Length: 155
Image 1 (spheres, one colour):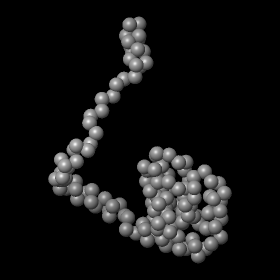
Image 2 (image 1 turned 180 degrees about the vertical axis):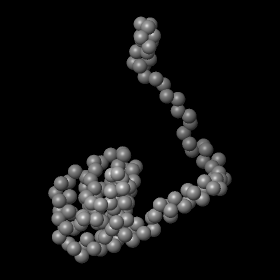
Image 3 (image 1 turned 120 degrees about the vertical axis):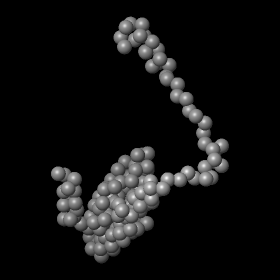
Image 4 (image 1 turned 45 degrees about the vertical axis):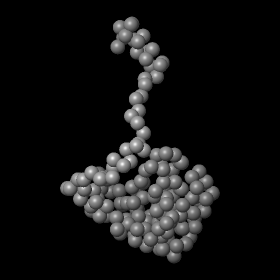
């Protein structure tokens, strides 16, 4: 039920604020809630890091602030709330960016490949650059603990 109602609150909002801490997960993730809110044309204030922060900045869809900087976050929120023409520009920028990114459009290359898969003909040229097979060795402490459990009959 919550999923069906996820867009109710944004319709009554002037902007979205999406913050996060710096980290590998942030750098590698695509915050899909930002994509959803850009489809709605909601201006964004986001913390730097990751793909969506770059998109918000490049598209002009809001403001990007450094992670952990409460003063910059407050200034960006107040700045957008007090600047109606700026919010309208950011809203338009978000909608323009999102217009070409419907699920049907972004999934089309993957669906086309799934219907007619192919193997990259130049793949073999790069095999020598790939690292060799990695064989993980169980840590010594864990091997000792396992051996002791076996001897004691506790498996």
